[in-house]
Amino acid sequence: MKHLFPLALLLLVWACSSTKDKQTANDTSPWIDRQIDAYKAEEPITPPRTISAYLFDGDTVYHITAPCCDQFSSLYSNEGAFICHPDGGITGKGDGSCPSFRTQATFLFEVWKDERNQLK
Image (cartoon, rainbow, N blue to C red):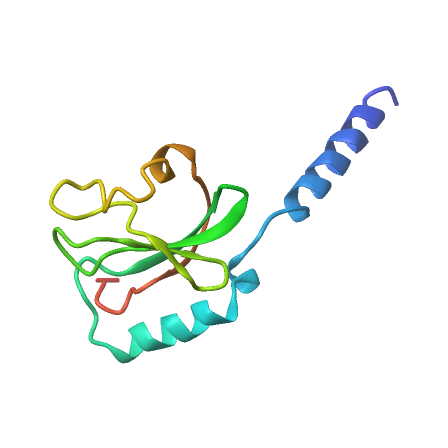
């Protein structure tokens, strides 16, 4: 009986943490769906394009990988406004407009990855 209370408490904490304050790909902004549809209308690229959600400066932002080598990746606000190029380019450090992104952003989830040209 004395083991029942800690178990119940553990289950309660787990249940609250697994649903509260977590976003999923279903919680993304409508512009993301339109962007994914636009990418799907294009030919697949290598490496595959990905869109990931991050928490940065208190807001959800979206990182979209560059199509290929030495090109900038892009960072967009939750509303779809361009913020900066946080990485990529010849130096790999982006355009220098948001150097703190790589050290201060927290990965939330992968929204989409183009897997059309991937081997199964």
